[in-house]
Image: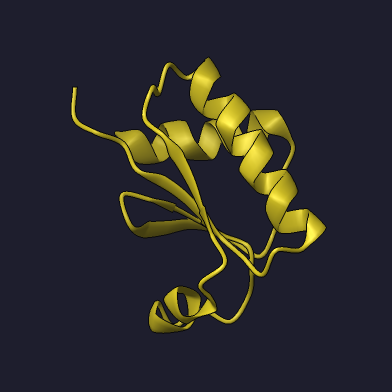
Length: 83
C-alpha cells in the first residue's frame, strides 16, 4: 500500500489542534498507519492560494479548508480522497 500523508496546517488555534486530533483518530479508524502531521507554517497555506485555516491536505492536496467537521463527515472526506 502506498504511503498516505495527512497534514493539518493551521495557526495553532483551538480549531486547528482539534482538527489534528480528530484526523489522528479517523486515520486510525481507516487503518491509515502513516503519521498525521501538524504544521503552523502559514506560508504553506498562502502558497496553495488559500486564505483560511485550518487546511487538511492528503498527499499535499488540500481536501478541507477552514472548517472543523464531525468525525463521520471527516472520515467520509478522507475516504473519498483516498480513491
